[in-house]
Length: 166
Image 1 (cartoon, rainbow, N blue to C red):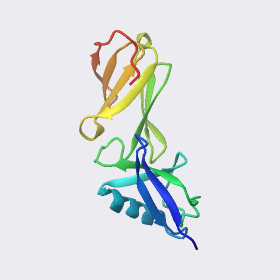
Image 2 (image 1 turned 180 degrees about the horizontal axis):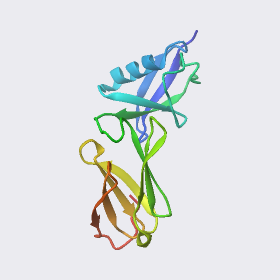
Image 3 (image 1 turned 90 degrees about the horizontal axis):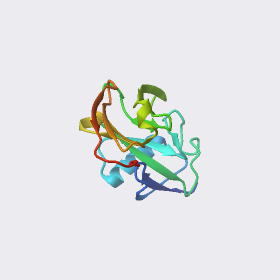
């Protein structure tokens, strides 16, 4: 059985972190351990393969669909947020709504509406201690800060007169 060469990228930026070599008969836990050792990460890691969140139910890397030359995206999951119990993902759209999802559970946690006057949401990012805030950038040139647990709008920063993209 020949080794698999697996490239490792940071999911949020696409930066290449390195490469690991494992056997198709190795497990997802073996892959996570190898990546953690290589990048010096001590927190919990979640992996994406072709956009799909991997879980340890499959017994081997071959069962998960790994082939030589595969690339995994690494998500760092840390902290103890009561809301997320792990990784959260924010999505946003043209209709001025944002949603916060539990990637581990695949469920919507929050549904936020920035207001009819704001237009499309162009960007969203978690900030603050353990991702306690969600900042959104709107087509109306306004940044809005939200409590990422309750969904309460905390601040409106209207310093830009033009559409924001991030």
